[in-house]
Image (cartoon, rainbow, N blue to C red; front, side):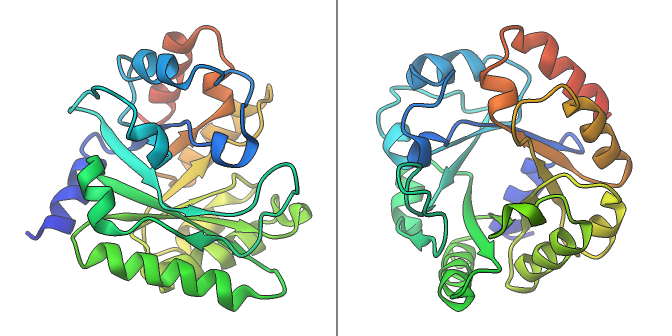
Length: 240
């Protein structure tokens, strides 16, 4: 077993991967529910999650972090919510810096279906192989450029496969109907993106889990939830 395999085994040691996504500030600035990011990290790391997803600037300012939780760092960025520029994400944090920050894994963005896919996918593939050279697992967050494609099983299946073909170890992408089509055609584990806060979250999550999804990265549905302990208990039950 090499270092990459060992880290991947740790990520899925409970059979699924439940991640608290708290990286939204890179694009949104101050999301509702994440006004005090340090306080949120201190609280959420005590709850039943496997890991937390953060931006490197936040990680560098956290005095301590539970070593039993996975630290997943975002290493690409796009524009901001002020401009709405989500395309052509840039790869900005190298593996040595991520290791110094204590990363167990990293996440890179792949936006597919824009005018210059080649630029974004080049940044994605470069990050994947740079990190794998150091034995660090890479989660590729694969999203369509057009929001109307977010609910398309065919589009989500295609872009998930692209991420896997480029070498990602895990795919994070949107929940859709007929999710089995997405999972069956992707040769690496798929975890679902929590998406916008809505009352159909658990119904969608159950459908994804039955279709073979291996976990979830949950942002707004968790950090805007008041009763987080009970919420995470229900998430665990979905993937048990």
